[in-house]
Image (cartoon, rainbow over all chains, first blue to last red; front, side, top):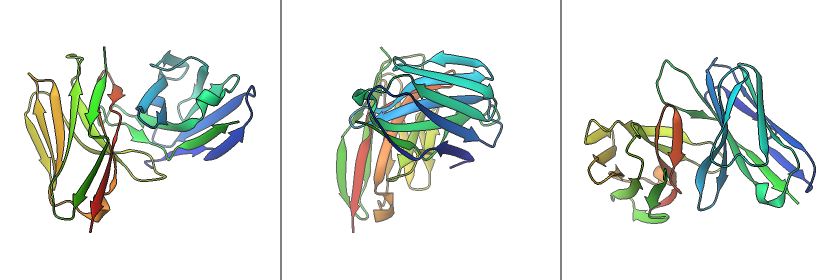
Length: 113
Length: 110
């Protein structure tokens, strides 16, 4: 998965608990993205980062926050998980040397009960 | 609106046949149109991509046809193989951000 590691790969949690998903990349890509994948919706952008400490909202950012303190790590936090956040979460990264190509991790399957 | 609409939702093709997946976009500022392939339990991986200055791009058995005036593009898989069975996503974007279609699950029967 192009040097992109997501952890954990699976998580079950309860409504109202905070959850943090981690994305780690080894290719020194400048841009990183968090998506969620749901049946019938494809992939929807949650948040993205264009550099260390530089982040911005995507189309479905409510209930999520992100942080990027190092180039290689991009964290997604669900402040208070809800059942509607049950989904598969994908991290992607993009460098500048190959234009617009986004490389995806293997995903994290999150279930909120 | 920045939607990308993809059809069909699912597709069954016989081995050796042609698979065709269609997408329509709304944002005329999009300047990059990739197709991603995803196998179960894996992340999406870039299959082929096109810029709006060309009408067609071919890589092996995979071809993108692009119609700028109609704001539509399609993926053609020639000589479809069982190993092509996967979910395919089209996308449109610019400035590094992508809007994805809803996905098409392709099953190629032996």
